[in-house]
Image (cartoon, rainbow, N blue to C red):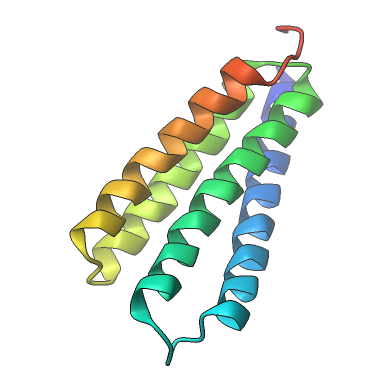
Length: 117
């Protein structure tokens, strides 16, 4: 039980770190003064990559426990939802922001071959 909680917490930390790194890289490729679509697309991509990486680490640390991945998915969905309420994003970003973490959870729990714990 404790290992699953720690795995979930570490997964969230990794997810946040990957989101920050992906957004920084995205700012280098598409600065805020550049094309708006590219800037927005890198932000959505960072949410997806962060969720996927965080869930992968949580699954790896817990030996494949889906509960740890659900912790990461829930936190990522909550944070993305808060961000979407605070900033006026286009509809496609709202849809992708809410669906891509769910897709990342599906991919992480179904495709990554860990023993179920």
